[in-house]
Amino acid sequence: MKTIETLAEDQPMTTMLEHSLQIGVGFGNAWFSSQKEHWLCWLKEYGTPGVYGRKPNSGRSCQFIYNQLQ
View: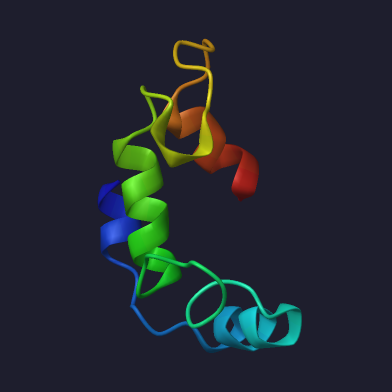
């Protein structure tokens, strides 16, 4: 999470993608104000079902998931 916390809130390419797909901040029921906030909350709730109904204890760490996104 420390790496994500160092990222800037404003990510122009992410904003362009959100606008072209009409998802994320400003669209639908997005409760987050940035993808950074979204990502940090997702990681914080990783060991629980969270808002996405994940399967806790899947054997995959937050670090594994982060590395898959690299």
